[in-house]
Length: 328
Ligand code: ATP
Ligand code: FE
Image 1 (tube, helix red, strand yellow):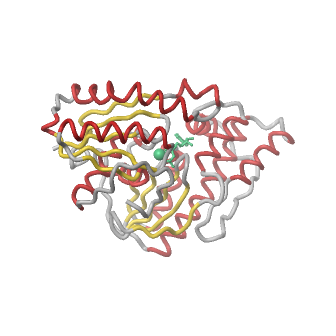
Image 2 (cartoon, rainbow, N blue to C red; image 1 turned 90 degrees about the horizontal axis):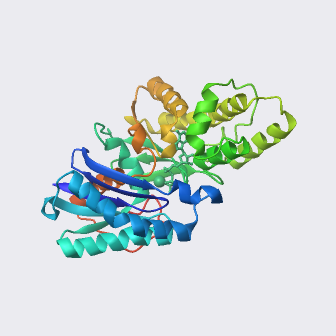
Image 3 (cartoon, helix red, strand yellow; image 1 turned 135 degrees about the vertical axis):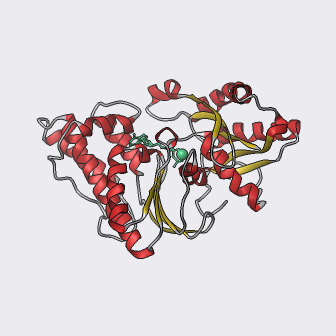
C-alpha cells in the first residue's frame, strides 16, 4: 500500500505518495516563492488562497503520475500543525473530503515529526536511541529520542531559529531569498575572518541567534571593506561552532546510537560537514535527510503517517497552529 501525504503548513503546496520502506512513488510541490517574495516573508491570506488553487490539481497529478487509484491507498496523512491556520485548513479540509469520497482513513500529522522522519526517505533508517537536532525556519531544538515516539526535549532557542537568522543575514548582505542556499554559496567562497560571538555556546542546550544576527549587522556597518563572502563565512562558522558544541554535549550525555539532523538548514553542506565530524568523534551514525527533502515537503509527512497508522493513533483533522514536538 501507499500513503498519500499532504503538506500545506506554510508556503509550499506539496503532495506525495510513499510506501512503507520510504520509497517515493511520486511527489509534486508547488512553490509560492514568487507570490511572497515582494513582502519579504509569507503573507498568510495569499498563502491559503494559493494552496486552495493548487491542491486538487496537485493531488490529481501525483495519482496519475504513479498510476494509483484510491484502492491502492492505506491512508491519507496531512499536516495538522504547527503552521499558519489558513494554510493548514486547506490541506486538512482536502484530506477530509478525499477521505470521505474515497473511503480511506485520514490522519492529522505533526509537521515536526514529518521533519524527523525525513531521514527515513529513500534509504535511511535510524538506530535508537538517537539525539535529534531540528534546525528549520521555525525551530531550533535538540532532543533525545528513546524510540520513534518518546521524545525528551533537551533545549531550544530563546529567540530566532538558525534558519531565520540565515534568512535575515542573507537579506542584510543583499543576497536575497531564499537565504539559506545563498549564504552557503557565499560562505564557501570566503574566509571566516571576523570574530563573531558564539551566543550560549557554553550553556547546556539552549540556543540564541538574534544577538549573532545583530552582531553581523554591526560589522557590516563598521567594516564595509569586508566582502560579502567573508562576512557569510564568518557567520556560518559561528553558527556551526555553536550547533556542533550542543550536538557534542548531547552525544556525551545521552550516549545514543545515532545523531539525526533535520529541517531546512540540514541542507547546508557546512552543517553536514560539521555534524559528520561530531558523529565520527563519538562513533555514532549520522542520519540526514536526502538534500531535496530537508525543507518542507509531503514525502516526509507521508513517511511520518506510517508510524501513526501502525500505532492506531488518529489525532483528528483540526488545525493546531502551535503544535509542539511532544504531541502527536
Ligand atoms: P518549521 O518546520 O519549523 O515550521 P519551516 O518549515 O519554515 O519551519 P524548513 O522548510 O524546514 O522550515 O526550513 C526553511 C529554512 O531552512 C529557511 O530558514 C532556510 O533559510 C533554511 N535553509 C534552506 N536551505 C538551506 C541551506 N541550503 N542552507 C542553510 N539553510 C537553509
Ligand atoms: Fe517545516
